[in-house]
Length: 288
Image 1: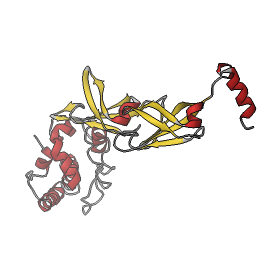
Image 2: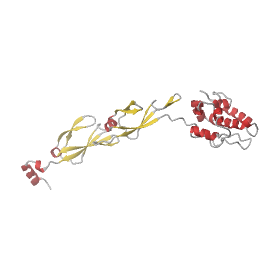
Image 3: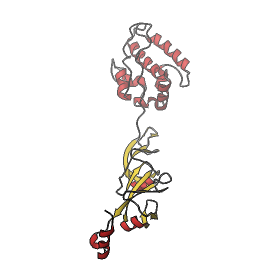
């Protein structure tokens, strides 16, 4: 991979920070416009400053080492900058390429002692964003129990393993399913939305479900079948249960994490459906 900024400073890619700095100061002095009066010296001076702003910074150097001259369309930095025409603004060029750029230091320095150039510093290379972002709605029961759900990307079906207890807004990363460029490939990042349930309310890892219970069982106790997300179970309702009362079923909430609360809803029989004598007796004997 070509890395022309090293050539600009006349150092090898393995040069130490001290060697890079020494080479920069030597070349900056040589090509400084106050010393070198040849027409090409000013452009050379700008290129030297640009190279050092990158290679003289550990983080920026690491980014350039990763992408090399691909950041300049495969050309050397010198060829690229000079192909833009005379009196080019390197600050603007780099800003257009990398989204950050230099901070106005590409202008000619005012005095010999000011070798800094690009005085505001280099904004840094922005690595290309190769990730693809998508949203996916998953069924409530899959979010609670875990399982698999698929998403279609450019005609490819990708099966995702959904962990039990996932919530809306969580993001899942699928390695290597993003965009590709120059031998690198991004990831697919899926933001999850959990579909609502008509049957359950969720509070963290706990669930609440309202179940209908006949009046007789509420009064005298009894057993009723209840379908949970885990399996169907038989629940024993204690006598004298109250409307709205909650019963806790440990371990029947989010899989391996939470509980299920059953909210009892009494079902009153219609008077006309009762035995006539029973209805009359209840009317006479039930407390006000």
